Image (cartoon, rainbow, N blue to C red; front, side, top):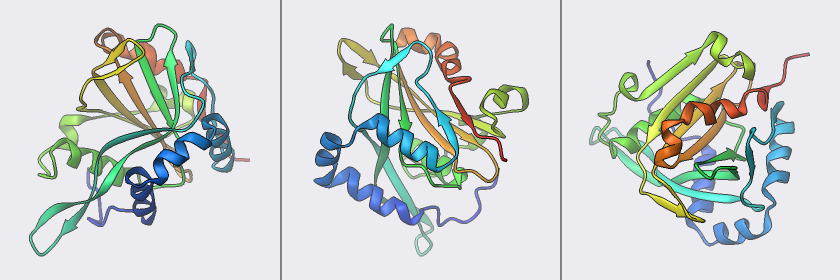
Length: 217
């Protein structure tokens, strides 16, 4: 798959990076109700996002997950350079059995999911541009994405350091993108314990019928 222009950084990235790395991040996490923010951006962008089956709200306020970097291409040296810290900002939910967590992004409004996939692959390869799309990304279309009223789903695993939260150790991470022409894409970050990862398809299906793009009028 071609990713197009090597200038992959939307102008929002700089602002988002400042939020993730600056002092505003701690303040924001303390004052922004996560569910209210998620509902606001969902309504604005014509999507429905409800709590997954078998999950509950884990954190009432916005959750900030810092991960990797956004990258910019240095044509002079023919290489990718780190631009800013990045990650995910959103509402955090946890499965009732504590084997899985998922973040619903509240940073909607982007329409170029390929740029974000490219950025994920660059983070996997630490900017070496050696992580191939075909080796890391699973693409689903047709019947598999019909419950979401989507055109495509993209899944890839991101390497993470183990994270302990309330007695559960999350060791695996899967990023999910749902896309539909004419809409912003939807972005989800899933965390699994070892046990949860073995049953990851069960958890991924928990958003079927709970998350979907609204049909055009």
